[in-house]
Image (cartoon, rainbow, N blue to C red; front, side, top):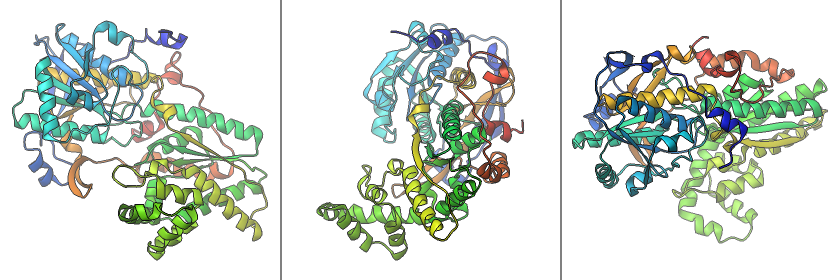
Length: 548
């Protein structure tokens, strides 16, 4: 395999660890926990794994540990640093007992059920240290929800002598891991389950999980690209760049990238929902900023748009719900019509007056997408909606009206972008390389101590890595009940952008100035070698949340 110069240089990078993980480890139990909401319901579902104490690690005395066989799964979308989590698990297990073995199940949870695996040896893992991607064993989105799956997985684990599983994933994956841990504990199956917090979206966090891994690297990659575009915009001075960023359920990526690059506009979905803004409100805000800059002779700019924006606009959410209901029963009738105009007319006739008004106001291409692109459950695939193009078209129309009214005399030309996959498999930043390795090492300690139903936790992340606090948090502590596919189910509560939080408050303090003036910041590419202040800094979000 041909390697780049960076790959070769990164092979020699030794990730930093908290002091508590460098030698022998002692576990200190903290207070008993309860779920963030719906305590009675969650406790009833998780009778064996509810109410566990928080755990922290401290330097301890040497003690012999039995060799263990462990399985690891990468679940869901990719995030930078996954390979270092697996490296940390491997090194941690070998430190506990050199005869321990690590097996990787291929293609995500499906590999566990179908018994597709590979033994991860030292020579195998060494090829992947400090690299991006999940290609070491692959990932998948199979959900572990049914007892038949649990039993198949247990049979496969028993055949390999596996007594612990590590599930590396986001909120849904770790919810499934907790359900699996409860099932195995209830049946005294002899298999522990430990979770590791992964998602570039940044929506898996709480007081014990300060950030999910991959968020740091992905935001730095996107911010480099945004900075490059802003420099181009400031050079050419003739385009408005509308940049959609990943983050369907929360706007953490958009907010972090705004703090790093200082664009003219950044829409925060959570604010749109809180203020009950309409789509026209969002378009009007964008058009007014464009008009103000144009009045200063600056017919260019950048606007950051969160991927899930349309689901946070109350009227759009209602429209999407009505479309789901109507098309679930009338899709054949709609598709029997030849032209898109006729299809849109039929659908519009069967919507409420409010939703009809929104639907007919949309650009034709977007309305067609809302009708056509559906997932296996019959729901609109919101992530496929080209929100950035929709907003460009609607802003163009709004500005034309403003020009007739004498409120806009400039020029507007929009350029759409979508940054998503560009950031998911980047070579991890030093922060993510260190954080992920520490998370993996932490998981191995939890396994060595016989724990189950826990998620690896590493905190105090704005301090030097030696001062990070490693431990474990019960997954049930993060759960609440939510309606999924018509049923109430226990799930890890998503962390949305807090409008009373320090990162958003800082953004609000600055955005009016950023809107009118050109105050762009150009972060440049991720730096892996050099001074700490350049290479090892955490996200702006973490620094503001921790008041650093």
